[in-house]
Length: 271
Length: 314
Image (cartoon, rainbow over all chains, first blue to last red; front, top):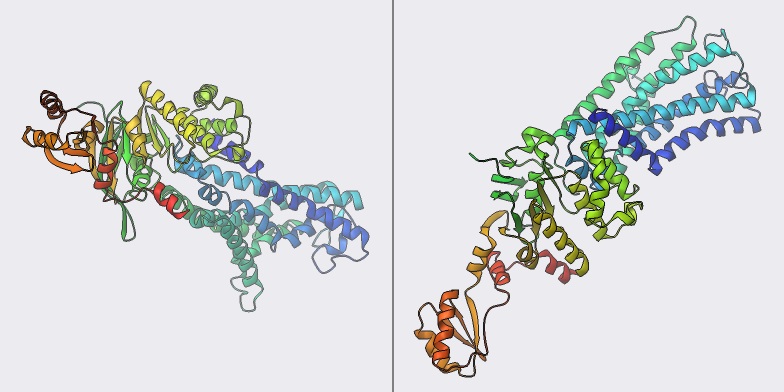
């Protein structure tokens, strides 16, 4: 195993031992279950969102609808919870100097932390999606459903589309996590970084709904959370997906590059 | 040219805005030294050690460990070097043993095989299964030493290793440092406790307000400090006359029931013979007990160490 791989393994172990990780993962897992239970008790439905009318047709619709609700602040918050903490917490409790006086270069330590926080974010999105399918299918069955362009999608194809959609949805969320890592590295304050990252995510959504922002709207990070809709159209609309990929790469790359350079040079001293 | 020295600092400066925490420090630690880095709190000890370990960037000057610069060579500059600043820190939610396993993996996984051995050395093997969150201060300090020894270092940099320990813990820590030094480790330790440095170190540097005001052997320093003697005798007047006429005895002064003077050891020996020949009884003839303390206070301008300051504050 290389140095980065060993660091990554320990970063995962550290995350697994911390409450906030389990809180985030637990939150992401319980939301679709609560959603399904509420809809089972009540007769109405989320008719004003895409696919909302078909929620009781198939359990496969559940994760898609939950994604729509969670993209405003739920998932950004859960991603920020770990990304905003992962450098700042070690800075605060002094363990950063403990690991930086061993045989690994700072660059390797940083890369290990980025990979660990991306892994957690990925896990959160897929846990939410898959638990959503499971809960929804128990309630309403694993059936074919009607896509956004009104075509019938078989359960098998629908499940494959869900997995790809989760992956496409993950991309801008990783950009949010990258911003969290940037704040975590530069501010050294865990709570501030988590809140700051959430503010950043909300701002990206807010600018998008203001009048007069139509021209820049396709390039806002918030918009990229809807890119997966293209997968549920016939024929598949790839253009928002392609845009989400390169734009998220920019939204992730710039803060990560700055954070990396800061991390390499910064003074590691007590608070 | 011989192999590079364990520690060399040249013109080391660390400035925080207007304030120079370290202001042109030159240091050299020789192989086998137990080097005491002595100074009041805020004098720049910890900042110097941080620069040596590559944790903070010097504003000017350079710090070399065995000839390697942490700024230029990154983690490789710490090959053969281990230590901690401001007390060792661990992951409180992991056990002592898991913390060491983690740190071994941040070095070379092969060093995992040494975990039992280093836990044994610091007498923590019984508690290794427990979370570090439940450790006492002394146990954490000892785990810090264990984590350092895991690297099988040739040079150990320790920042106030015995601070905050109870008397038994202090004694254990000093015994441990002495044992490690006997095994050939070069040790640089910062301290504001004079008796600790006096007990452990062969060479010292004294830092005050970011500048080195003394560097050299402990014995030479003691030599500077020494020279103050106290003589007790029932015949003060006659003794005083003899002292005044004796070569190498200076600054003779009456202090209550005794005489104080300054002299080197040879002169003191000659004086004792002269007193004996003159049948002047000697009740006590001894160096001032806390002469190093006096010298330290004198060199550092009488600033109290943070120990005293804390005591006053609390």
